[in-house]
Image (cartoon, rainbow, N blue to C red; front, side, top):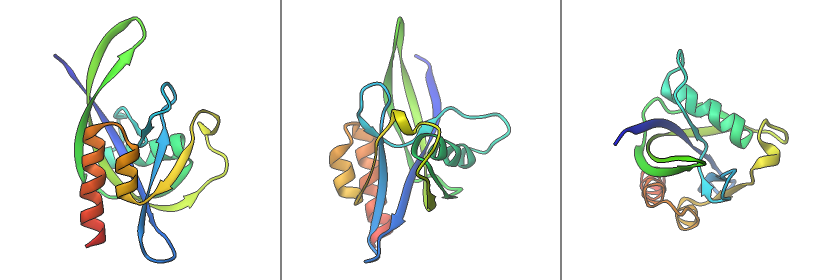
Amino acid sequence: MQVMQQVGALPYRFNPDGAVEVLLITSRGTGRWIIPKGNPIQGLKAHQVAAREAFEEAGINGKPSKKPIGKFYYSKQRAGRPEIDIEVMVFPLLITEQLQDWPERRQRKRRWLNPIAASHLAEDAGLKRILQIFHLTVET
């Protein structure tokens, strides 16, 4: 079976107490809590695509890590077409700006959480693992 490649952003910031928070957004179709992600774009590096997806889907700008934190897999349902397996390479994205208006504002909700709370909210097992790993790498 073919596996489609995507890149994702794990947006994060530090709150006034110095604790890390991550941003989850809802998917357009099911309303599940996910991270911004999308398909590779010719001419852009993977971490640049991750930052672009974060802007379009979550209304945030930031500095993406050039090194991924990891990857996870999920299956995507497609109307009238076979399900497809997708591998998502995830890049941490340190937030520098949060916008009030952005391209997909009317299609998604966003929520800042500590990484462990975010891992409980996310349904995908692979994304849960990424959030837990991120918690350990940033908090220690």
